[in-house]
Image 1: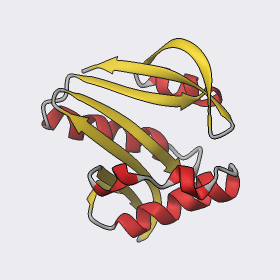
Image 2: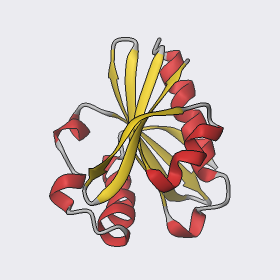
Image 3: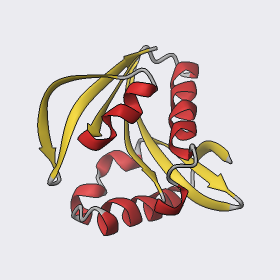
Length: 137
């Protein structure tokens, strides 16, 4: 699997549309936003086919990882963890010291295994329960 920063935002959007809009019923107008134009997008490709994506919003030494999505048929293969490790490596290379994300509550354990810590109350984001998480690099 190859994971890299990409300009192929259309491929990233197609994965996000499949995962969030079609599978999780997130309204498309909530899934796609103005941050996509300025974000750093990562794309995971396996066997020549896009299978995962993540979006990095960088502000000085802080960044937010969001829109982490892996196609259903690729989940459980380690693609999500590889995508997150690539995201963290990219952020370290850009001088980021603190990373945050909003995790769907069912995925908190996944992010905890990568070193993130949950904090604050559970909240609703697009009809899905979430909690904020942070990691110091």
